[in-house]
Image (cartoon, rainbow, N blue to C red; front, side, top):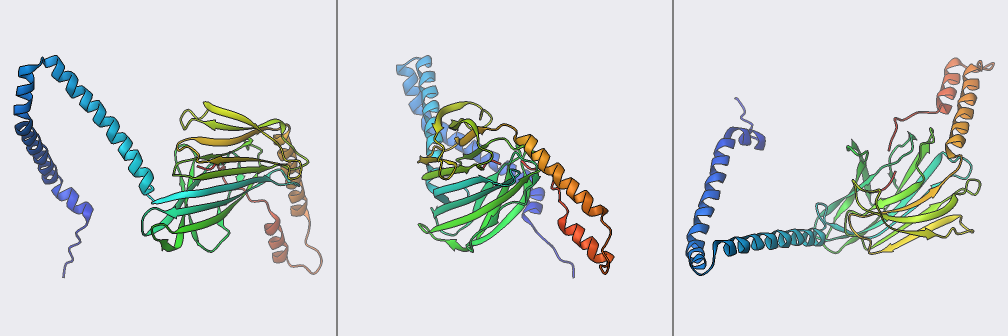
Length: 324
């Protein structure tokens, strides 16, 4: 017996001309109904006023309708939480550079979400890192779900990942997610800033950067508020941040951050790339000496190869970090 599989795509391809004809007919019928309804009003108006006045009135109504529709769309998008249906009540992250090895970076993120409608299941995160080396992606620090790290990189270098909740959220319910990035900048290409671009409704934003005591920032550390892409280099405001001598860190707190704006902590370094190159070269030298060592007496060749493979420095293709 032959099976007939009917899908949405096959229906669209088969009946697309009829669908288009039906849509065109609906548009014509609506235009005809509008003309019949508004015809007497237009004739009466033209009888009392000039054609120029009528044209100005139509243009004014069109402009008012456009802006009203635009702001209503933004209001509805903000109230409903957009595609994923949540509001971020708190977003906190700590970016830290390792004390002993400046190539090793980590970022811990705590984000609290509130559902704006029922059946909320997914949190979307995205990031871009300017370092190059090891970037295995984020991993969860709690048991509220699991991360689907899709290897999707858009044209601007942003990487997207999704946290699937264990249970869907109902309207008004809250959930806290904790995740972490462990990164290694083997080539020393990291640009000295940590940033967050606000896309969703966000009630509170907090960012902290911890510096190694042996490698402090040079000059002032500043917090910048920049215009959204593609003009992210345009600084909207800037302020100096005080370095806490006890924790060797700076803190930026932003209540009610603005949407479509990037907040960043920026600083300057001297000799960072050279230090990364020195550490990487020393690591390669150590690896080369290990490779040249013969197996010791009583040690099998298989065990010796396993020892080398466990200590070998792996290289992952260049990634691109800044949360968005």
